[in-house]
Length: 122
Image (tube, rainbow, N blue to C red; front, side):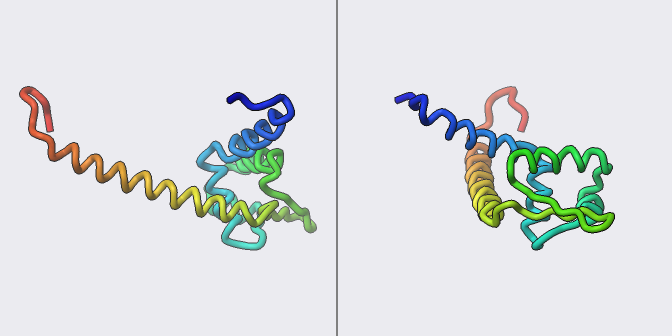
């Protein structure tokens, strides 16, 4: 059953949340922010090895999707998660990923146990 017109904006907001998460470096930044109350841009740059301009772009996307907030103090900018539940979301996503990888590993082991096919390399 398709969703109604009144439901559409809610699904768009949810899709935008996942768009904000849809890059490995943005996920890494969120994980770094999950580990502390706040993290300076300097520390984020050191931890990721990103150039300042690239880091700024990734953080801008996270801000636009309301995943992080920032605060300037003197010449330093500090970031934090906009909502602590983001850390929970990341933890659940990691557990889900580990479960998928374990299942794939089991399937790979099963597949490697299949009889050899003529002309097929192992």
